[in-house]
Image (cartoon, rainbow, N blue to C red; front, side, top):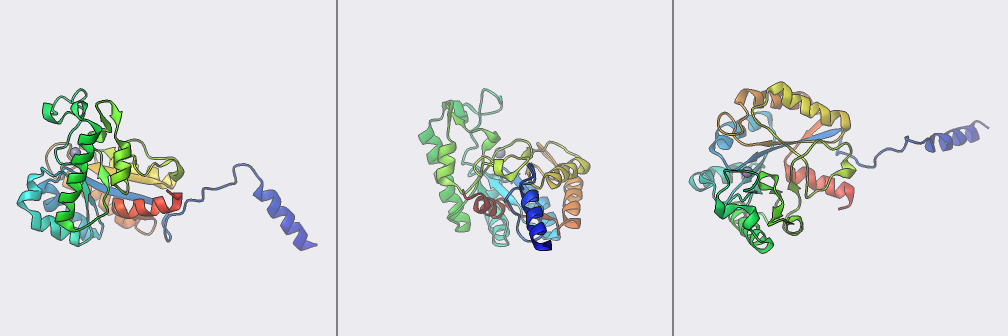
Amino acid sequence: MKHSFAILLSLILGTIPGKAQSDFQWPDQFTSAVILTYDDGLDGHLDVAVPALDAHGFLGTFYCTGKSYSLFNRMDEWRAIIESGHELGNHSLFHPCDGERLDWVPEEYDLNTYTITQIRDELALANTLMKAVDGNDVRTYGYTCSDYLADGDSFKGVVQELFLAARSDGPIPTSMEEVDPWFVPSWGVNDPTGEELIAYVKEAQEKGTIAVFMFHSVGGGYLNVTAEAHEQLLGYLDENRDEIWTENFITVMSHVKDQLGR
Ligand SMILES: [Zn+2]
């Protein structure tokens, strides 16, 4: 009698609307994820960001262009950080962007004058260059200026063909099911405080989803984050490392794709 009541109760509970939960699971005990990405292949990444990440045992993703002077001048150091687990991501060769929206884009690298073939070849060649640096066949992409149109046509299909996943921009997702692995939202920071960076993580924690940071300069330069604010963020992630999965883009997105069956 007691048994049948329990079965009946579980049947009723199982059918309560809104009770159905997402099937998406983070690995182990984690309840959300944070990805730290750094764009444009800058010396500050080697000098400031990587030592800070290493001190906390976190791995970052570095979206480096083919034309990066730092990559040319300090290739051994770039190789060494990738050897230790940081990710070298594709950020094109010449960093083409929408020149109608952004006035600093050189005429030669205005995506409005690119064809789909041109951007495909540029991204494929950047993959070859990155493979020559780190030996990896599988790579992720960081859309330059989060732009995805070449002469008005979306080249997302090319990105899907060439990469395991890609980072775009946009708000924190409310569920992982809505995440497109080739268009993952991120926050391109511009001189944030440590508190603002932490608040962004807390939003992802509340939603059980993902916070992706798009950093450029670290410790001085354009679209900067100060070394102090960056360190404050890492400190928070470290204190909450049992709950928040802080990992590089390729590792997290491999898991996300697996969970989503994509
Ligand atoms: Zn960039």
